[in-house]
Image (cartoon, rainbow, N blue to C red; front, top):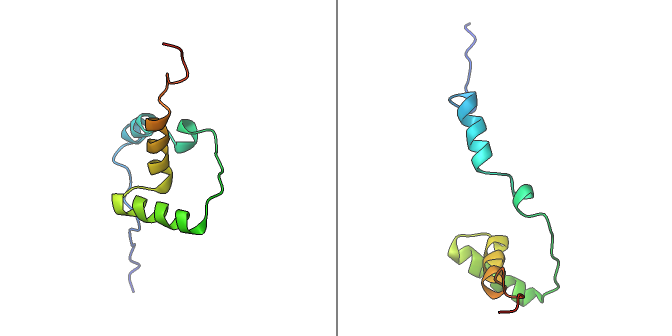
Amino acid sequence: MTARRIRIGVKPPTTERWIAARETNPPKSDRYTARLTIDVTPELRSRIKLTAFGRGITVAEMLRQLLEERFPENAGEPS
């Protein structure tokens, strides 16, 4: 009987390309460092989740977009 090797995953093409890709896409923990917790009704939570799913994005992504639109970076500064 001959032993057969089964490949389970695809190996990155080169170490350099893998490292470069990692540098251009920082982990989420580097981009978002603060956590915000709010209480919502189960019905509102369901509507939020369904809306995000319908848009093909996560709830966190959708809420970040909404908060960015509502609270732009220089909103608190006097004109």
